[in-house]
Length: 226
Ligand code: DC
Image 1 (cartoon, rainbow, N blue to C red):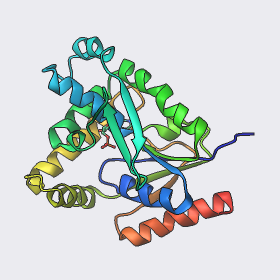
Image 2 (cartoon, rainbow, N blue to C red):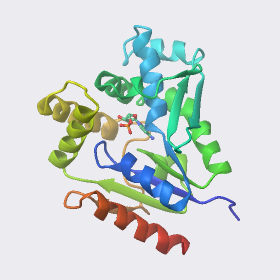
Image 3 (cartoon, rainbow, N blue to C red):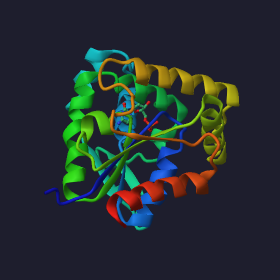
Image 4 (tube, rainbow, N blue to C red):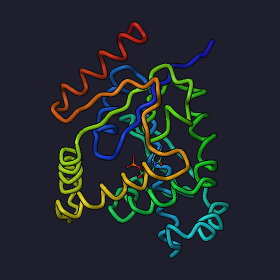
């Protein structure tokens, strides 16, 4: 019997995965694992080293210099460490989103991160958010949820999130980058973004945050009897 509970939460960018997962994790006392942060940290390292994000050989040449770590601050939020530097803020910059998406299409990068993600689920009750959690990382997750929302709702959420942080972007740029990233993430050969066959899809287009949160709480409570 598995000792720890695992919830896989996949979906495109801007569907609300991370905000919801954080709150759900807190509610049930699970650990929230944001796997996108791992790809972002690699993207940041590649960016800082002046290597093209689609230059597979160049990226692979850098992997041996990368040491990633995750820890949780006093409020339970995940902090991302890249060679001991806290890069939690830098990895959120829009240019790093594109780098993350590009490097995530490289199979050796995915392999590099696989065990780290699986190990988290071996030692904690987790809600893990990403693109391939239900299909590749945790195919035996106890519960798989695929969160989605229509394109304009997702772009608007991402735009609000960035401007609230003071990042200077236009809605058009955010929407264009997001669509391009989703296309890359869905069409790549290595572990593309898709719902696992046994995932439950939650469409949040018409739901506000509280309603989306409640929908997840209901699914999780029902599954685990919590
Ligand atoms: O969730 P995010 O937007 O922070 O993820 C950044 C990129 O990383 C995303 O465009 C695709 C990639 N990613 C992935 O391929 N697999 C995951 N499990 C998580 C993220």
